[in-house]
Image (cartoon, rainbow, N blue to C red; front, side):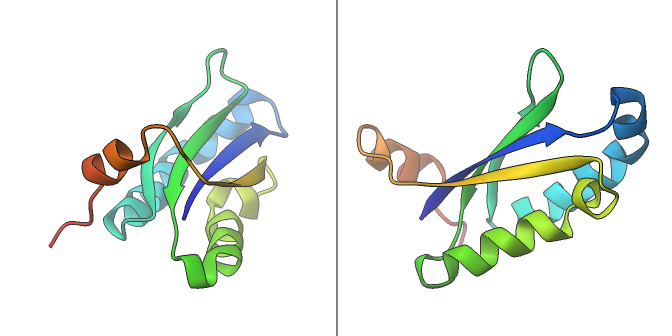
Length: 102
């Protein structure tokens, strides 16, 4: 299952920036696990977005764990909106581009 996470900052950007390195290290770990496929800040910079792939059988728990483990969430700097997503057009290409690595 795919999901989209919209991250909205709850604090001023200068406060958010104090945790950016920890947030990015956290996302890098999730990328290595194959959970985060693409991530980055929004423009203008009032938050960010993630494209996720999570196991179908544990999608809700995995999404909650991703949100709750983020340093932005732990420090009260941002909130997540988690949107399970069932792509139709282009799904085969998405699956091909982001095929799990052996």
